[in-house]
Image (cartoon, rainbow, N blue to C red; front, side, top):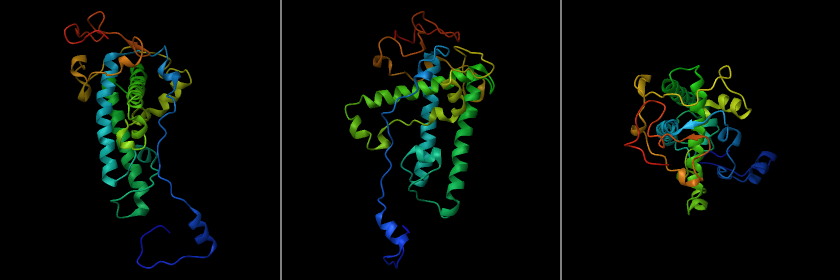
Length: 248
């Protein structure tokens, strides 16, 4: 009933009258709800700075890939793509198949970055995976916290394109659910500071090659559950950081 046509008429029947009463409202995400403290403050998963920086680098790649899909169909928010519940879109010749097409794209995006995470931690069923998912969740929380403390945050919240993207950790929603309930995936084992690997899962990532964090001034001392790798001049992956890293 909302399609553009050359000839239209105003219906006086019940469906037409109901349609006239419908008010279209633009979707605005809610950014003020709290992240889950059961994950942020989980003492069983103390993630290192290196792990956070690795997750930050991967999130930047994920955000670009998500924005590419959004731009392809002129979709305004990542939430519409992640849920495949799209309010407005362009660029699809067959609107009847659009939901299925977008669903395939969304699944392909999630599968692609899940595979990259598996390579980063050395395998799919490793205790290290849960630690990496916690790092993904924390880095998303950190970026959102910084954005909400921006002087123009109130204005930015009216335009999702000016806010950080949030769906990144939810590609592992099942693991997040287990962690929120206090569980530990993979037989209860925990890998506190696992090594991470670069593309193809071959060479270890070096902390000096990863993007800097910009969050430590937001909380007294360290962020919740972060290992200070720089105070001793080295991290647990065996790479000397005394020359490249400053004090937190």
